[in-house]
Image 1 (spheres, helix red, strand yellow):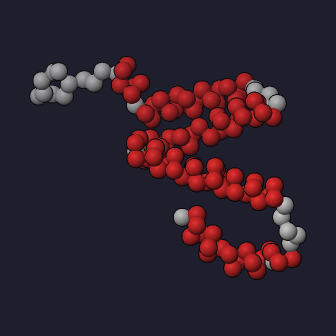
Image 2 (cartoon, one colour; image 1 turned 90 degrees about the vertical axis):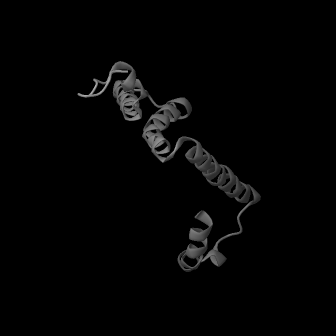
Image 3 (tube, one colour; image 1 turned 135 degrees about the vertical axis):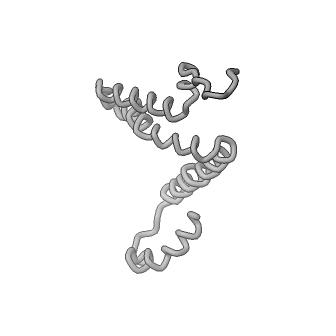
Length: 121
């Protein structure tokens, strides 16, 4: 997907950015771009499809709820941002929401009533 979209955008990028007018990138810049491509894109796709195969699409999409949580924690850990009460409350709401969506925790506490005309287990 990424390769095909990149190939389709090459003519537009050539027209808009005029790469022949840009200075030659340094070795560090080239290595950084390849590092981002290898780790952030290629490895991410490999992990994504491996998790998709193992956990299924519904469970995989639940991970998107964790993006704000990881962003806050990374900001606190690496950027020295302050963890506020509303951040903790929001993370709690996300956690409860994920537990409810998943359903395993709810099934532990809620015993289904037998339907009329069926035998209890």
